[in-house]
Image 1 (cartoon, rainbow, N blue to C red):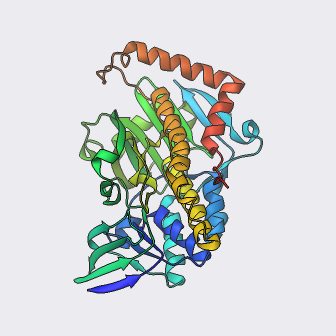
Image 2: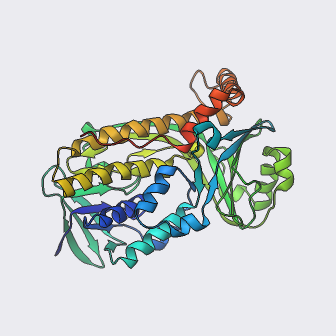
Image 3: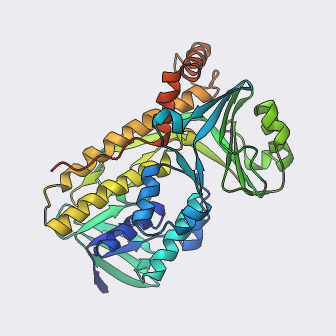
Length: 404
């Protein structure tokens, strides 16, 4: 068996694990990433691309922002359409200057992978049998098999960035963790195409036929979504059927501008709200999807992972630069405060923008619930203060600093 030592073991080579590793390395804090799948598989995950300013700043601090700054598109607003009537949420005006950047998660991941490789930092892809050991002790470790060789990775701390199905959260004993979950009675059918976006800004559209989102990855690549029943399958939706339905759910002007083309990728994603408490167990910290999942309506998934990274990065920097370990226990409390805000916003946006009808057994989620949400959406899009509430949360709440 081969034994390796590092300061921080990072489980998962998605954007949160890679970003954390890059930030730590900039501070001279050694780290090794362990990932169960291939790098190509990681890059094959098609995800969101709306980045809050806090995330953008972290990428710049990590020294991996050149392509993002050159190709990312700053969005100062977005559109909410209800039965074809549109309202623009002017984020920049309503928040005093804040905006978001449209830059694909796949692109961010590519940039971070390239930076890690260029810096010669260690990453073990296709690691089998990953197991976290002694996480409550001062000497935790991660064991795994790589290319047939058993490896023991000795470390001071473990960052569990391995997603909802990873091993990190399961390392916390079931009796010590509380998991909150809401599964929504519909999914998002997403289509990626090499076509120019229908609009310069995102369009969130609610209609009697269901929800639709017009998004983009670049000036030549578009990403569109349709609310569909959970019983639908990809094979039920040809490209022509998708484009036809999308046109019916977009405002008339946008539908007239829609450029269609062959899909590059199509998938159906179920929607859920999920939070695990606590996000820390001994010297193991949960980051991103390992601890929380949000429906994509509020564009918060990747951004909440980034705020977890920011908090853990501050803690590790203080530990190794100042020798102060007293800050370690702040992680879960600080991270969860922002997570709950992001989860609530995503839940709220999902409730307002989607059609529930009689798809839920909850006593409110029939016609009465629909009417409540129609009223909610009407108020928040017709009131300046209401639009400000949406804008402030969409651009992202500030990151919380560590206590002294």
